[in-house]
Length: 368
Ligand code: TRP
Image 1 (cartoon, rainbow, N blue to C red):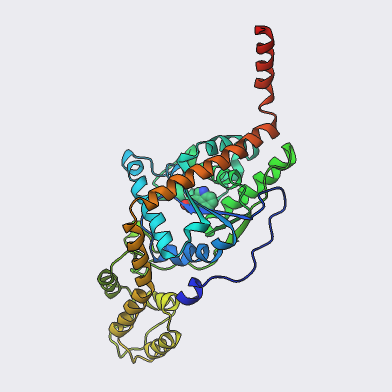
Image 2: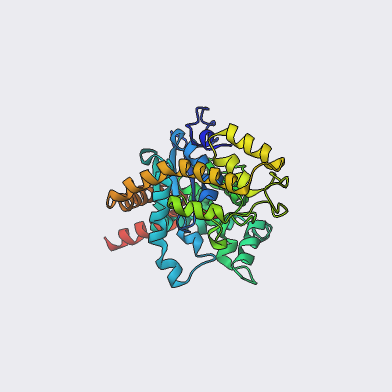
């Protein structure tokens, strides 16, 4: 994977529509909890895939602030949601999501999703959810000794997000694959029991290995402080690359070095648009004929070639005052309309509306 191949428009035909009833245009839903500015790890792991796919669908991007509450729910965490959501949308647009093909929405602005989540929760067992490794991982990561109820129900809420907009495809990383599987099960179970309401969503796996951090840790992450952000200025990128971890066994530039798993070369591989330069650097590195300084300077240059147009677009979009806010407001309203309709359909399919309608009719006739 190189910057060039991941940034170009994919010409492969859209996957077939998932079986079952659904909207005419295939729909895609994906998104993230509001963690803030996006970094190169987000780009390689999910954003590139979204950019490649999104024009083939009616694409919805969720800012999952209710999901955030399952592990982070202090007043400060919640208060920062707006800024972090705006940053994420801005970064996504700057990196190449086309706003004409994208609906951005805030999960907490669509409270009907919570109702759907409750209704779906009768269709899945606790042990089924307890077996999902990503949830135990998140609980541990959040320092929870016992599993919070909301965290156990995380995949059910995610299934509600997916089914509420009748998404047919859901591109997610490995950590979320099991959650999409729950959504598929719930769709099938619901349709069988109450009638065909939901398309069964297809998982689109983003099967790229995680991008290592600048410190050589397995994953680039904000909380580890080892990230290069899409919005970092050029000199900041240079400084971070200069401090980057390389081959620790290499004590001087005359010593043959290891390229495999060396984060500097992993980044070259993913982001450098000059494959001949990368091949040459690798060969000389293995032979002990190039210093870390040159390898890093060329990486800085490559990253800045990749990031320059993103920074430029970001500045343009940020100068368009109120743009991001408006996109989120209209996207949330649009999604809410959609979800209200689905939830009404769900209640009708389940027969949840009949009892109250019957009482109303009886009350009305007695009042006459
Ligand atoms: N669980 C996703 C995350 O890891 C966020 C998310 C919430 C999501 N609802 C979704 C992703 C629906 C895809 C589809 O942050």
